[in-house]
Length: 268
Length: 268
DNA sequence: CGTTATGTTGAGCTCCCTCAAGGTTGGTGG
DNA sequence: CCACCAACCTTGAGGGAGCTCAACATAACG
Image (tube, rainbow over all chains, first blue to last red; front, top):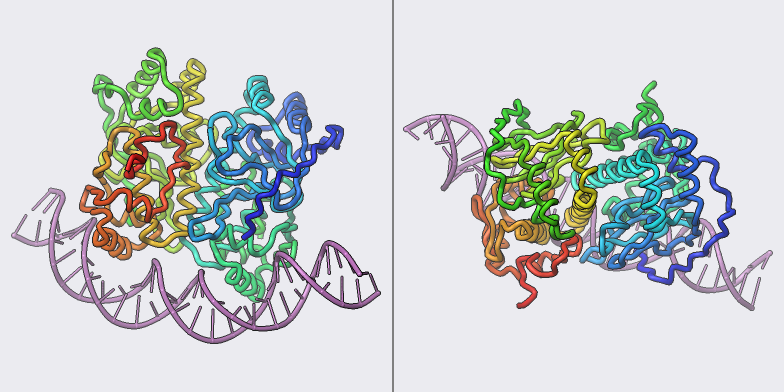
């Protein structure tokens, strides 16, 4: 439960810094509709124009602020959270590479929650003017962004269902399956596992569990031979069984391709 | 926990049926930006073109379906829900008069959850073509709809926070405060109370509580002199105290006007 | 006027929280 | 290189909020 509210200590980088070959966002949007070369070029330009490096624990936007820029995660993880009245932090969403952070740029006067870097990260920063010009010029990509936000809403609903209606083991397992599926979609996880740049405590904050119980639950999953979570890494010991325990049904992720979306290969 | 999946038994009404003087949606969008006469006329036409009457318990759209129409609630309440693996129903959202049900019309292939009428209701049905033409012709109203969906996303996050991080009394109180605020915004509640066309069980499904515990909790709130919930009606006995118990902060509703948004008048 | 959904109340149990005490890891400075 | 410190991880014991199961009361509806 860190309440660090330091300065945004963000380092503006020269825009030369390697426009990632094909960005995770591009990869994700391909799930919605395949992009022609003009479109993927435009997207690359949009994301490459202004890139920030954010240190772990630093806020991207804070509750109460008026959002001025949209952020797209290039590397690293962020989360959206609120502090409940009981003092506990509820993580409302994880923002992984390829995710858009606030679509609220144009329309909301005040952020209702805070977005913070969970690890060192690189983000594309897009201001209103740039976004506006972009969506006007590329209506299909604009639709793609709209689709992205509908997907995020669907994930949000799943989180409510998960945290309100299942036990600790299922909750953790299900969240990990989701993260795996989303990371696989942008090429950052395999069926074996993925890097997990967050603490057990943060995992607990996302699953609405205390750090202690999160720890016990992870031990149980390990002892059951399902998965092993160590500092910084998730390793699947039995993906299909994990998915089964979690009751993981990737429908809510709205991916196009049926394959390669979960730690449980459909061919097994 | 009703699992009725009957035919949509919907009755198409002649379009003459009284274009409601100023629709709840129009009233809500005024919170975002005031509409000129052309715009409010266009909105009225859009909502009046095709109106359906739905009986209580009937589905509007079901999980797995491909959505073909967007629905706007004119009268009555609907809810979006999913059945959890433990067999319990989790209500994910309430759709009150003025609310848009699926913005996913264009972009999602499959509904991830089911939407059902909780009471007898009247809805405007808008197909892709009509919506597409409308948003092209009235970009400001299109933005308004976009704003509406961002508001819904914010409410969704609040539900996660509420159901995951607070006790039974706070949960119920907070939900009731939200409903009151949203209904006040469309002129369907006063500071004294509002009609509640749903069962205690449904209230519990929204708060992730069993019907029994919901009942006990309502009794406690009544005995504490905060509010009285009877079949079909909520009466506030002490609005400000209720809001205090709930920790109700309407920021997440993103209403424009500060006043008239909660059972607790700011002037008290 | 019976039948069914909904509301009401009680007793026991379980899962997860709280509080408390180590143990481990990684980074920092002497 | 080692000592130290601050996060983070790990494990235990006890308590409480809400669930389960069970019975009954009351309202809605044909």
